[in-house]
Image 1 (cartoon, rainbow, N blue to C red):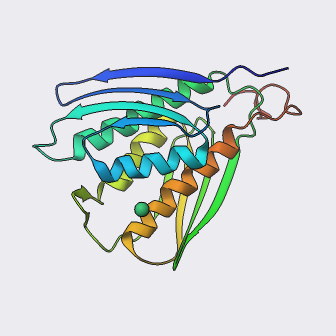
Image 2 (cartoon, helix red, strand yellow):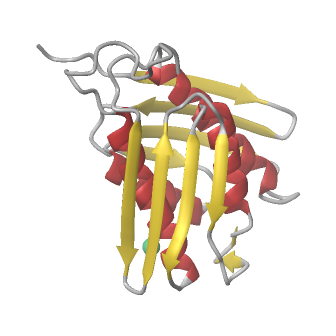
Amino acid sequence: MALTQRRARVARKTKETQISAAWNLDGSGKVRLSLGLPFLEHMLTLFAAHGLFDLEIRAQGDLDVDQHHLVEDLGLTLGQTLQRALGSKQGIVRYGACQLPMDETLVETVVDVSGRPYLAYGLKLRQRRLAEFDTELVVEFLRALVQAGGLTLHVTQKAGGNTHHVVEALFKGLGRALRAAVTRDARVRGIPSTKGVL
Ligand SMILES: [Mn+2]
């Protein structure tokens, strides 16, 4: 029996940003992204490809002020979209982990679809900017995603490295870890928690 695809669409509008996101958890890695931030588009393309997620995002914001509002609101919107696509979380594996190498760099990403937002962030980004992208916003994006998505997330830099490699290893690893965590296992009956709720 084919399982239905889990997908959701969320639109979020504030005085600072206007974002709409559609996320299919059971996709094939297709993306359509318009963010006005090419580096982040590159990262989310890799995230989707390695997560086998279909992602459609249109985001506009006050990039003339700085990138902070847009990146943070994007994390929030994606977190909300994830929650909605997951629904009751019936039958999911719940945990996922990935150790992702990129040349000299090794980043470990561990996720629990716990309903308990927590971020342990251990990346050391040497370059403040990658092209036009402000690398300080990587942690802001993750914090917003974790908060709105109800995720426990541990990100640890084991080795490295080049800043582009470190950030790229994070986004690829996050895709892989999240893909494993949201996978449905036929042997999991109901919610994968002895509490009965996530
Ligand atoms: Mn790259």
